[in-house]
Amino acid sequence: MDAYCVVLAPIYDERSNEFCLSCDLSQSSFSTESASNVETCFGYANYTDARQCYNGNPHGGGHGGVGGLMLDPIDSCNDPLFFLHHAYLDKLWWEWQMADLPRRLYDMGGNNTASQYILDQAGLSQPGGGGMFWIMMGIRERSRR
Image (cartoon, rainbow, N blue to C red; front, side, top):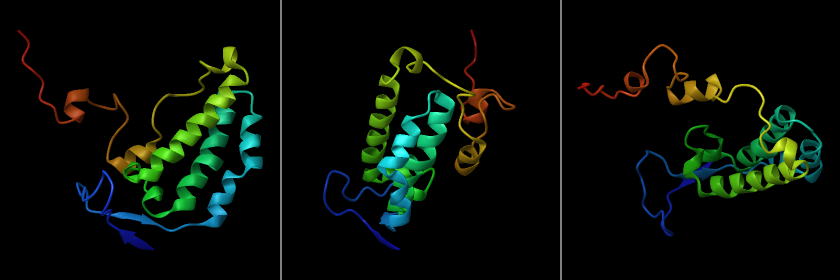
C-alpha cells in the first residue's frame, strides 16, 4: 500500500497527525455497494433493519473499497473521500426516509450510543460509565459559588 502526503489543495501540508493519505483499492469491497445491495437495504421497513443493512454494505463497501486510511475507524475522517462517501450515504438514507416519511423520519431503534468497539479504538468509555463527564474528559470542575 502506498501513502502520499497531499502537496496541493486546501489541506496542503496539514500534518497534525503522524500519517499521510493512503489507499488500497479493492474491487470486491466496492462491489458491496452495488445497486442490488442498496435496493435490498431500501426494502427494509424499519430503522433497525435498514440501518444495519446500510451500515454493512454501502457504508462498509466505501471504506473497504478505498482501503488505507478509510479503513481506520477513528482517522478515516481525515481522508477527503470520507465526506464524499458519507454525503452519498446521507442521500441514500434520505431516500429511504422519504419512501414513508411520516413513519421513518423519527424512527429510532435501540440505544443511541457508539458501539464499544469504536469507543475502545478511541480510548473512550461509554458516557456515564463510572465517572462524571468532566473527569472522564480531563476537565477540572469549577468551584461553585
